[in-house]
Image (cartoon, rainbow, N blue to C red; front, side):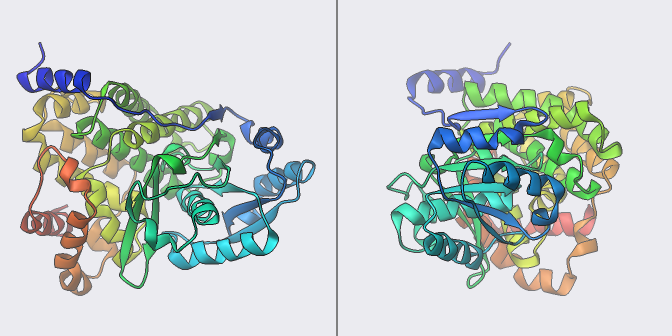
Length: 394
């Protein structure tokens, strides 16, 4: 039997008109990246800017994709994307797009190249600087057509309404959210994830898990996002450890790709919450991989939140293989971190520097708006305490 709160949420769903936003088309399956030529023809792109990073540009699969593209169009390559992409990355890519008169954008990579590509596509039609679009629904004109070829199983950026770009002048990871920035075509090829290093399989997989969990407990949730989130949690619980232990497990790689896409659609149409709000400052100040930041924060944030959403956290615990008890959800998250050899925050972040910026990190986390969608909305002081609990006791 549902709780009174669940009943009230059902009434809220029925009384509220919501949009569900996704790519126009998703091409998924082993070998899906070989459909890139048909995708550019469908969108009538003739001079695409390919956005990637230096490492991926050297991979054989990247060269194969470019070779296929070259039979259809005249691509231009920008390989200057960095982890936690910056305003400068966006500006450099945009300068190349203008110089080469590109009429579309293709990202090949995970969240970083995809977010740079989305940002460049926005600037091409809207003008200004990317900082002008920080916040919610500030993109007025549809961006250039974009195709996102996803090479990780985690970020969900290829099907989400969000862009994350680091403003190094302010040490802030900007959130730009707009229905208009979702790529028109997402290509999900599990073959491209087989060569991922084990630690990136772990971090991107946990990133997807956090997307699903936060969507499921978010105050912005809805029946469609709920269904996607539950399915994603189930798949990640079953297949992430397998993909980590055996990178060539094709079944695991396929289902992780499906799960991360479901999680991306789930949070894109509901929201993330406190974990992401706190993770972005860790990335901005300490250049931690986003999935790593999410992983170290997740167990403690669940402990902080679960009393305020007992039924859903109990279900999450069960989906992750534990007893159906909200208090077990944090244990399940910690066990996953342990199994995937996730390094503790204190192992990668200097204590002195951490103590210097922790107050500002808490302010930045609140300013992002994401904590407002958490089941339990924290104060600045509670966020500071949470950061220290993660650092000291994890």
